[in-house]
Amino acid sequence: MSKSFHIETLGCKVNQYESEAIEEMLLEKGFEKKEKNADIYIINTCTVTNMSDRKSRQTIRKAKRENPKAFVAVIGCYSQVKPEEVMEIEGVDVVLGSRNKEKVVEICEEYYKNNVDFNQNKVESFYSGEKIENLNISSQNDMTRAYIKIQDGCNMFCSYCLIPYARGPVSSRNLQEILDEAKRLSQNGYKEIVITGIHVASYGIDLKEDISLIDVLEGISKIENVKRIRLSSMEPRTITEDFLKRILKLEKVCDHFHLSLQSGSDKILKLMNRKYDKKMYLEKVDLIRKYMPNAAITTDIIVGFPSENDDDFLETVDFINQVKFSRVHIFKYSKREGTRAFNFPNQVDGLTKTKRSKKLSEIEHIISNNYLKKQIGNTLSVLFEEKSDIEGFESGYSTNYIRVNVKSDKNLKNKICDVKILDTKNGYLLGKVI
Image (cartoon, rainbow, N blue to C red; front, side, top):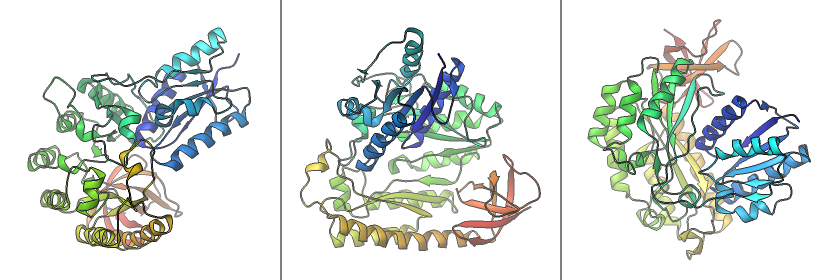
């Protein structure tokens, strides 16, 4: 019996990391990776919105259409929250959750060794103090930038979000395991390490040691072949003077901070159960710019949250213009059963959400272009990743996470170069290597 597999991944960078770790484990066990008509399909699902649930179900059905005889394993957040619903989808053989994903490898082996007929729900409940699963990576599909998952779970319980139920409480990886993985990745040629997790700011709160996110950054920065360290989405309250001073000493940490905002209205932030207000958020932005004046600050905004009226929305518009983000990711509020906001009064209609989303997109286009124009004349450090869509150009990302294209007759992939910025075009920068 052949042993081929295909993994479909939906959702966030954490899911992508976990899928790549599972892929490595399967390859080590002698399984063959196939893009189509595989013997095993593993669907790593997402449940952040209703659309995510729908895409997860569509992907599961697509796998069975490609190979009706395939063994189908469904893992991830959607299956953690709604395992019975997943089991009802025709063709699903086994369902696992979001914290025991590595067990899918054992199940695949057992299926081929003993030809076991599964059709089982193996989703487990979370418990306090649970250790993070043993997943790690030595190589990734992106040959320049590597992701390292440092923690799982979230204790924030924002009123609109299912993730604490889908991922469980915070569970942090052992620091030495993180450093070993970073060293292994750097030895395999990766120059940039991206720190990721469900709520990276919570790293260490569940560990006995007095340890936090900054200790991870300081540890990785000592690895010689790691040239850049990038942070994924951050809790604004993590930003303190001490945190930034320690980051500046490391030099390798990129000047890009994704500080999730969600709304520019204090009323809405309180309803969302966010743990800050506009005043605190702005203080954190000012702190970053005090120590890193050219830092890119990106964010997320949810439009159409229950009770968001026109005045609340205008507050968000004003706040976005005040902060001058380099980029804003805009989402329409998605009503999620199981969250507190599901039953909130004053739900906003779909047409209003669409209008507000369009308005913010127009503003985002202006402020992001203004940030790009500010880079003209600057010299930015760029890690080149691939050939550009423009013929004869190479493309990569600056430390402040802007795509930069330069004309070159050399292959610059995985090289870090200083680039003088000359112009902007269609959402990216044009420059020359100096």
